[in-house]
Image 1 (tube, rainbow, N blue to C red):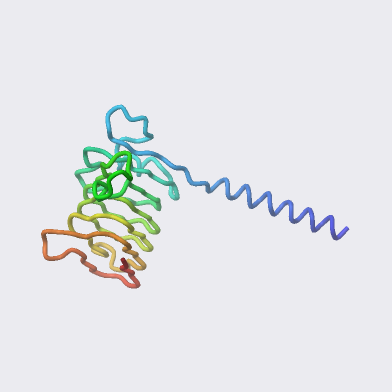
Image 2 (cartoon, helix red, strand yellow):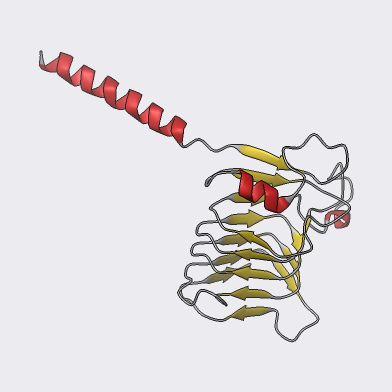
Length: 178
């Protein structure tokens, strides 16, 4: 009798775990602003507004940047681009165009963003992972959220014509590494 109750409990627990994992499954969406593309979205802000927290956006290469006005990333997402300096490694890429973003403001917590050539970046969300990006402008942490913490800047290339490239206004426990 004990073995039967134990087996029933294990089976019910396993079924519950599977059911819960299916309700929180990530969905991957493609974004491409090239005319004639069959991607899920052609506009970055529309893509961010049209997905749910935890989803993944794959931003494909393009001849034109995805945004001119500032885009706000206000939900937890994973956002991946094609990389940068792709011409420096001939023969490794089928297409050497990078995914280019204009100014962005990350206000949500736990956003992961990687693989872009971008302009001005503002990070105001906790636990943001900013990895393998090229920033052609300033990267500012905590300009509208003085309590921002645990931002990770990893293996990114920052360059700017201003005297300030990385500006940490407020916050704590940030990690900057190469």
